[in-house]
Amino acid sequence: MSIIAGTEKQSSFNQTNRNTQTEIPFQTIHVSKLSNPASLVEYNGLKFLIFDSPTDDNVDNYISELKRYNVTDVVRCCHPSYDKKKLINNKIAIHELVYQDEGCPSSRIISDFMRIVHAIFPNDQNPLGITLGVHCLSGIGRAPTLVAIALIELGMENTDAMKLVRRKRSGAINVLQSRFIQSYVPQEKRMCNIA
Image (cartoon, rainbow, N blue to C red):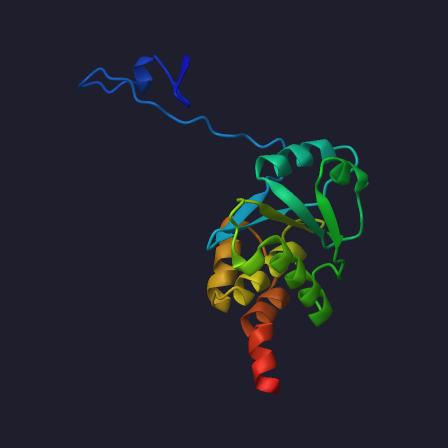
């Protein structure tokens, strides 16, 4: 096996076109060190990485994964299960937005989350290709719900936002959270109705 110009090339018969005897290049696939791999959700160039909560024993594996995705900030939606100093020492900022497991975020949590989103992605742009990490305990309830809400706030239709998150993160968003997302009205629209 040899590495040629960023692609891995295998010299076995299984990787050779039988008619022309030319070798077929293939890309190396990254294998996550996480027992529950993180899920990347992208919309209009903005990137969110949803994952479950690290522990002090495995936080280094998570840091490797966060760096691979160019995560600069992490939003933690659950009570701490690891020392945040490890992330901070690796130049990853952490934001605490804890709310009830299997529940829906309050308007304050949503406002705080959207302030973070707009700070990370000014003018809804991502010229540096960075990713915002979002996690809760299991990575299938609170974190995906906040990401779906961000997608709606950024212009995606409610149903499409939920479908995208669920497609990227198997088992994400429970029934209560699904109803909340379906009926969610973006903050900007709410402000227009008040005036």
